[in-house]
Length: 405
Image (cartoon, rainbow, N blue to C red; front, side, top):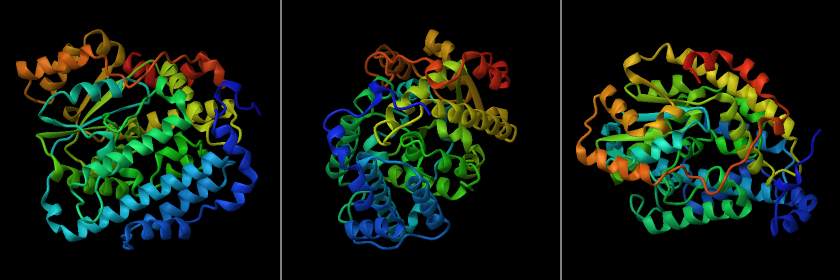
């Protein structure tokens, strides 16, 4: 077993906090009753809704409890659970009191997906420059409703909560920013909405809960995506536009559920040399999980992500066969970076969207800003994770050949 590389270990003051690990493992238990009671006390609400939520919560906690979390990780896991469980209670309460949400339509959303580190963030940020596109900021997705007195507003509180959440994350994982820097006002991925239904991507990417990730492959994700849409309707009531633009790499594992809930979605797939994308993603995952586990095996991390990537791409290719070609647009990262305006015009033409000179000017200005959500240089090598370029290329050969990357 390879131990956590020295450069990835937690820094001060978290290294000092983690000296309490053995005590913390007894004093900070994670179980369903405790986290649900805390969320109920925090919100004053107790209706959790029906369906398979409880089973997903139990599976999530089981996935956490097999990990060797340090004190930072235990506190972080409890915080993430409380964050999303309080969101869930508030969303369910709001939906009960506003049955008119059933009549809100989310029509023809643009959904950007593709494996991690393939240019989804760049494209998402650029498309946000079109005033006709509704692109949510991180604070909206992190806290889709406010407190009971003003659930559709309460913007100051929601932004403050998001600033604290992302600020703490940045303090605990200062080297995350070179790969993906998140602020309350940045345009972010819609996986936050799935996490409010206890399909928690954070725990298998950020906490390296590999057993949990594998178990989720067998989940029926229809309910989490239905809850995703419910929250999108609430956000739409706060601010609407002609179309939603959503972004999340995790959708490639869950395309059947996504399309069942959004059957008219217009899906943009981004593609990149998968060995480079995988190396970049392993680097990000290692930076995250090394701060919350007492020790990580970066070679195990590499093996997990190679296999999990293969499964995701195979599932995506199978699901694509059920989606009309008119609803799928493929773009390679190298083409998008070489001529972004050509790609944008082609996307708008392909999906029959209006590209005015004003919109084109907004895009050109945003492109000039180079919106990648990275701070500094991100250095990574696939060999650092016990893999070779040849092994990755051979394992994912069918994907690379199909999309010419």
